[in-house]
Length: 352
Image (cartoon, rainbow, N blue to C red):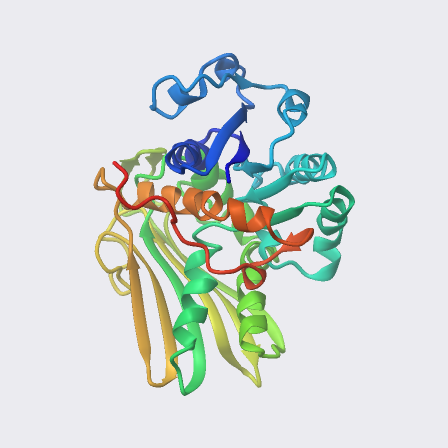
């Protein structure tokens, strides 16, 4: 069976999603919505370096929804436009179109109050929505849960992202949201009280639900280090003395100790914070299950262009694209990773 898919957004994740849609024989690109006026009227394939696909990008949301696609792959940024993203998703769902989305990330496993409006919109439209990616997403939902399936006893599950973001060409996220390249005395959006829990609390709650663990609380912790001198990254300039390394944790607490932990170790240069955890390879997602026995699993990232951040963007895109058939076939409502069957890259083996 072939499913008709609309791509909503052609940024860093969206371009990779478009390539992924084109790679799957069971998906047909039915339309592309873009926010940038310079992209309107261009062939969608050209926006992703594929050559002409015969699908023209448009800024008209009514037009792409009128095409009655089976699913929208939504990759528009929500970090600095949360209300607009929620309005987009509500509109798509009420139009009777399924959604797989990379944002807003708190919808991966929201509490009842936060998830209720989107869940209601999906029920009203008789369709499903699933929000996921690589992190938050696969690296801290299915991957750790699969590893716990070979445990006798578990005292802690720790999910880590250990990456150098210097090749991540997204200045809004790096500078405005995460606070890199900004004075150390400034508190960036990401580190404002409660924001880490909003963004990644869903990870801790979902793992707790999957493991049937009752948490007492979720605690936030972070630390930062300054740049030793001025240097350049793909997103811009990082001045001496401004933030250049960030480490944070969300700790799911039970009986006074952390039992489920989400940790990020983010550097803009490999030589920064040498005493912090180091990645396997160029960059990795690491799962540590402490108990009997103890397990450490490293998921290394590396794109064919030699860059780990490219691999991370592609992983997020393909987590969504490969789930399209499963989400279309699921009952209406807001889904989580605990609701879906195993999603694989079916039909992709042997591709160029």
